[in-house]
Amino acid sequence: MKFWSIIKVVLLIFASVVSIFDTSYVESESIIGWEPVIIGLLLFPIIVIIGLFVLVVIFRRRLDFEQPNWLSNPLNFSHPEHFFHLAGVIMLTSGVCGMLATYFRLGELGPISFVPITMGIGMMVGIWLLKIVYIMQSKSSNKSNQQGPSAGTR
Image 1 (cartoon, rainbow, N blue to C red):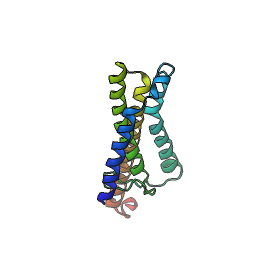
Image 2: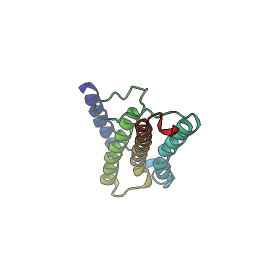
Image 3: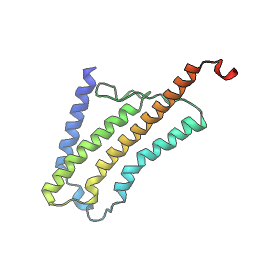
Image 4: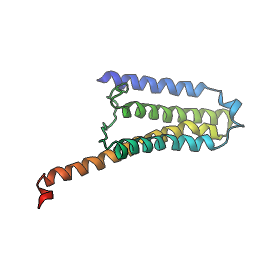
């Protein structure tokens, strides 16, 4: 399983190097406001909340969550949280590297410099929300299992 941790580190290094040498922000720096920053931060958590509502409230299904880590396979789509965890970490890392490179090149930062970072934070918040719902479901199922089937008949 060390294979996936090596692949993830290589992807992080590649994304960081690419973002350091990317100069495409220069053309769009002045025309983009703070809206993409806010959208980047809120988009993924909102998608997760809608998905949880559909899954838990409408379909009455249990969430199948597995804590992402460096050894997990991000291409295992039975647990998409592994992929989104990797994507969030890549966005955060490349965003910080790109922001530092922009600051050293231009001496200032515009809103576009913060978009990858807020998108990465949004993904991490979404995964955190999934984990919270999973823990709540696990606790409620443990309580009902401890009470047993005859607890409601007394």
